View 1 (cartoon, rainbow, N blue to C red):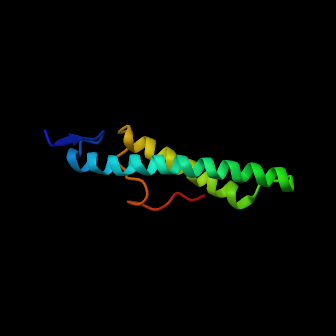
View 2: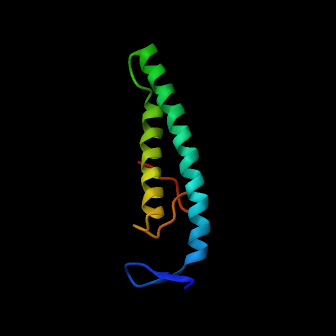
Length: 91
């Protein structure tokens, strides 16, 4: 009852995963707020300069990858834990 099997048949502790899922779920909410700030900042940059900021484009792309990793972990599509338990996704 305290374990589950992944697609490969490996056993994992369910309660540890639930704890990590709660922490990662909080990170998802925080990242969603950061995404809103980046979106507004990028809009202002384009409004003022006429072109997107390359740093914000890169960060937004990596943030999107991170959010995808979180969703995959939370839905049990993968057992690979996202940042901060692994490296930050980079291009």
